[in-house]
Length: 375
View 1 (spheres, rainbow, N blue to C red):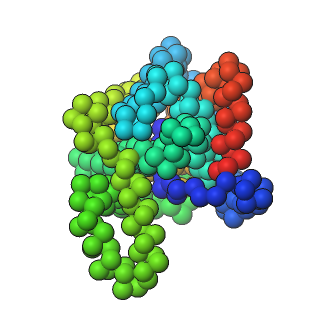
View 2 (tube, rainbow, N blue to C red):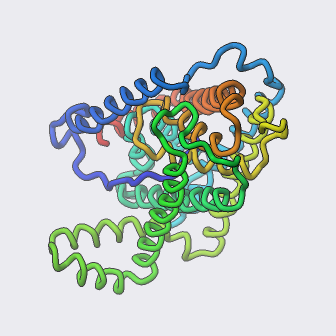
């Protein structure tokens, strides 16, 4: 799915060594996921955020745009996966097929596992004893996530500033009773500030590690030496993922293919929205700038650690963005069909792509089981 960057902790002791089951080790995360799931179920029942549209909602769909969107979705996921090779240059040399295999299986794990526990799968499947360490592989994923988050939140912030909204803005998000549109807009700018701060912090540790360490020890060191040591160690590991910036070719390649990834995402979302008949009160169609706002809002919304499959969270992101540009009557009809088809295509492609590699090579299934067992 299209998504920005959650934080990823560095894994420590494998479970088998600790003698703990997956459920026991992640009990609080699984509990939190269950509570969030119940919360979204309550919202669906109470409001108009229906996950399954009515048949009438599909009356205006131009069905030829659906296979066109599928093609763009495949292109989007291709570039989302293969650009990782630029980050991995300092870790090891991996072929495109290997990167696609690990990435697409990892993307499905992120989607299906609760609270984004699947973020561990990619680095754990890629590690090779004596060749690629778990820490090195994880640092590249963290760097990818931070850059993506900065990229996407910047696009969202620009859209919120420059793309005209309906006037006056509704007080509440359509379908989400109690969620204020003003707070949604503030949340978008907050995400930009968070990712900008994360990127700057990691970049300072990469380009000026001595200075960064000194600053941390002068600040957090007054509170706790142990905490400071942990922060220094964590930032140093994360900063290693920015090794691509040591090469103009790798940095340029990663940023270029990231632009292709997000560009294909936005283009596909725009085409499908037009194909579903999403329009303004005066009948004019959705603009590309409005689509970028929807993409950005969707991205920052699914940062909320949610239920398996992101069901409810995904649709909420679309409704949060659409409320600023389209009348409620459109959102609760054509918009409902749009959110459903957008989610269905991304979900099915993510699962089928992973399923292909798992069935084609049993070694991948074994590697996935080991990754989950030690996450």
